[in-house]
Image (tube, helix red, strand yellow):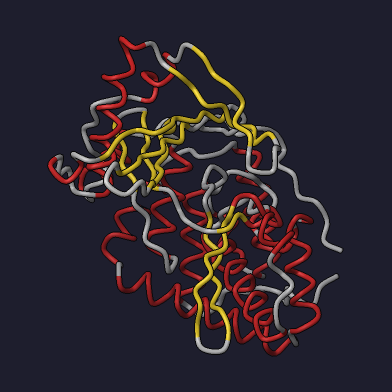
Length: 354
């Protein structure tokens, strides 16, 4: 059984550097917002948010004084129009804020805003968070190196993120794994590819509740895609295993699907396939990837102790001394990418390990 892999301690918030803001401005990620994160902290009351099964979600629904409520709700509706409609306020005339929830246990202490369309009662969500450099780099790398596009905006200390639709990984494993053998193979395949993406770009802490599963009906079965929704642990921890979802015990149900349905040769095939796709994405966005790493290799995203630990573990893992000359996390990720492009990126068999 896979072992637990717990962060050494809660990661501190890392402010975005001026160089990162210049990058964000250049690539249309910086947007002037009508409201900042701290404005949402002015709520006057809150109640626990209970799910449909009567369980505490660990979120709180917050309420504002009437003198603040209209201003805050109007600003949030405008932010949604910036996020989804390129700022077209006329298209947002029928939108209202239905609810605002607050999560106190996350690193970025997010607010989740529910937007509802008055014409048909359809709703959507977005998040207002404290801007954190690790998370911003994580979002950018997701957008550039994964099959998923990511919509987000930054203004000073405030980060706005779209809601990623899907079944939370822990719920998926509890309720959706009793499927045909064919679909089990597809689920195991996607986990292998997800594991590879996380390790290449060093996205950590992919326990089951930090990603969602997007299911698409297809001929004779379903297609599955695992999508990260938490990027706080982008290139921060020093342990190599922290960047491999296979080592989190919360993912064991999917790991065991791989053990039951995959051979070594099949696992290697899917790993190589995903590496090739990542390399293709890097080449397709070469100018922007270079611009991002020009900034990332100058930022301090972790402690010297964690940087030294990770570069030694990766040097041993890849049998490559190039990591030992790295001085920060950005250089370590860049070295990983360079090894990938040279087809010299090593990874052990994952689905058959017990």
